[in-house]
Structure formats: C-alpha cells, structure tokens
Length: 244
Image (cartoon, one colour):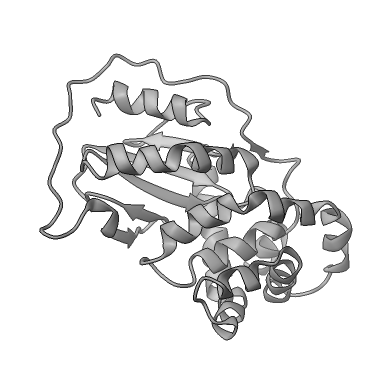
C-alpha cells in the first residue's frame, strides 16, 4: 500500500487527461420519468449520503436516473461543468426527484489533488456539495499557484503522503479557504494528515480506473459511461434522453 500511495501522489498529468472527450450519448430517448416529492418540509438537495464507492450522492435515493461524476477539484473542465451546470442540474433535475447526482474524487493531478479532496470530505455530508461548488468557483485563483507545481513536488521527495498533503494545502491556500467556511484549522490539518483517508482515496481512484475512468470529468448514467461528455449541454442531453 505504501508504494501505491507514493505513486498516487506523483503528478499524473501524463497518464490521465482533464476533459479530453468529444463524443456524446446518442441512445434512443426513453419514456418520461415522473417527478418524485421530497420528504415533508425538505427538498431533495437535503438528502446527501456517502456511498460505498467513496462518493457523495445528493437527491432521491430511488431516482430513476443516477448520474455519477468522476472529477478533480483542480480540473478546469470539471470547474467549467460545475460553474455552468451545477445549478441547472440541481434546480431542474435533482430537486424534481428524477435524478440523483454523485461526485467521486479522481485525483488526475496526483499529489496536488489530495489536499482539496481531503478537505472537501472533512466536514461530512452537510456541506460537501456547497464546498465542492465553492472550490470550483475559486479555481481561477487557485490554479495560478500551480505554475511551479513540478518544482514544488520535487521539494517533497521522500516525505510522507500526510506531509505532502499539508504542504500542498498550504501552498494552494486551501487551509485558509476552508477556515473561512467554518472548518477550524486544527480540524483541517487533521483531515489532511489522516492516513486512512489518504489510503481510501487511492483505493477509490483504483476502482474508478478499473471501471475505465482515465480522465476528468467522466460521467456515468445508470452505470453506463457517457462517452466523451464533459460539458453541461452534453450531460443534459443524456439526461433528457433518459426521460428526465
């Protein structure tokens, strides 16, 4: 496991890609899916849980259409999807009870991705999706700090995954970022140093790779990959084709 973790926190840009697809799902449109009411006094965005696959899912557990995204919080194409598609996805499709949406971490950049992924999972289900959206919205400021990523990663050679995660979080400004959103610094640093969570992220990424995931974002609808769909219009087309 130590060797696998050490490999996982190296930059993986040469091995996996961020938003490199072009094809879309062109299947025959399905019969319309009926809306489903949320529990009294709630809407489906308040129903959030962690899945066995390590993702976090929002929406009706019995939704007819189950959308899964493998994404990286530092992937610009994932950020573009979130910034253009998250609101209509939630407001039009998740709140109706027709669609559930699950986000699974896929650490396409290796070491830098561990920091936001660990912090994004730090506070549990209640703030997972709001924090995810805010991290994507903040990408323009964060990514400017990645310009010397290779040199910085070299300075981390030989250090433990926990130390590397903390160092990247400090460099990219993520500790202050989550402090401003209610996660105390001590808790943030504890989450970044949690060896079990680091190992879990490696395991979840391995499982995604075994499913054929090789870049971000990769979307699945009801267990079938949406080949090359990386933008909101492409994903919405697939949802409509599924009856949403």
